[in-house]
Length: 587
Image 1 (spheres, rainbow, N blue to C red):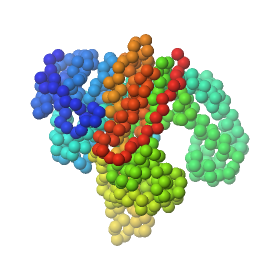
Image 2 (cartoon, rainbow, N blue to C red):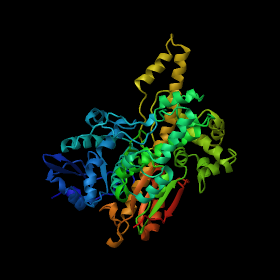
Image 3 (cartoon, rainbow, N blue to C red):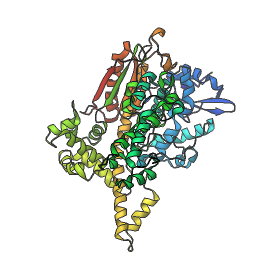
Image 4 (spheres, helix red, strand yellow):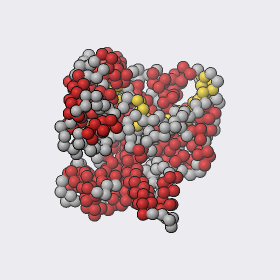
């Protein structure tokens, strides 16, 4: 295959460690054409080179040959990259048109985006998540695929380049970070989380009893069900139907309006304790029991399906396997392969630290430096205990106005006026029907027509106090959403930068000998430390024991680089809780 001369000039991409927003070139746009694929090189000045046709099976080979000097442009990473990974080939950089379209279409900082917004064929949502984000963050269930043909990709890429060129530099960085996140998601699915099925079985058996044939209810759950029916005085009580269960509870004097753990716990009745235990074990059995293990964690790997940008703040979601809801009691089943280890790291108080960085609140940054942030708040005399500091700060970011959080927030406003002012301003904008944006430029969705109609009607002469009260509640709800959006969304951007930098550092480590490989991790990852899991503020790296210290160092250095990339040289550290796990699965 002969490439356009511009395709041989390499520039470091935004997805490389520590790079800044600059002109990235060259690109190769890939898309379907006839029965095969078309690759179109694009020079730095936007000039398209000769259209080159290849067989689909040759994409991995061409990626391996040209990747060092190329950023790949494709419709959707999840549609193109898995086949490349399966051949043991890593793509260093890409531009994901689907993800970039969603960012640029909705960002209040996009300039000249009318043509892009008119390209509605690219308005395809990610898959509906299975990890249950709150209603504020639900995905659009009307998901559909974007176009995968070469002409559509070229046209959309031209539209996106025009918007990026005219807009603030943060959007360029955000699009690059979102795209590298898509690469990471595909790679982690391919590598999988090392999973010890025997340990999983031992946990389930210890908690539930032996596995029953045909996935019948295990003995512990059946026993609890019998106890509950006896205490309800109804041998035929339906425990798994909320309406029927509530009727049974009402008959014995438990006047609950829902079967949530929090409401049931408020009642004193002999049936409550076994009912809560039944619900806990039933949730484990249905969500992560033996049937889940057989489907999602066979042969020593749990391979969830990640959805980058799956919620409106930019946080990831999951559309298969429930990766973002892994119960803590199953964590012992996450075991490195023999001769390998797990490097586990999570960021302490990620969102409060992001708030300090965004607001440039020197006092809050000082409270977080080299220490637990909540303890730092206590040491400055703002509140009396760590739990008060946590309640107060989370309450400020999530808009709590009652209880301990509401009582303590005024003390934070006095101590940290810049940080509190940032979230208070975001809330005010939301309450007034405005749109807020994250640090790099992802914008919140506008209010719905129903919300606007409710606010408009509240101002009518014939509006009742009930109408005005409903409008005020809706405004406050939206203010709580926008208050948190700017912080949670920026935290997601920091995490993407962390992932992208860490991915590059791990890829630079040497390969181990074939004899020391972890073949279940696949051709791309079997001989090298690699990312295996990500959850908002936590990563797990699966590493050969010999590279454990290098992998741990990479995790720390990547966090420092992500902070510099987003916030510059700021006197604030993003503190990591880091551990190297030595337990390994059975050979």
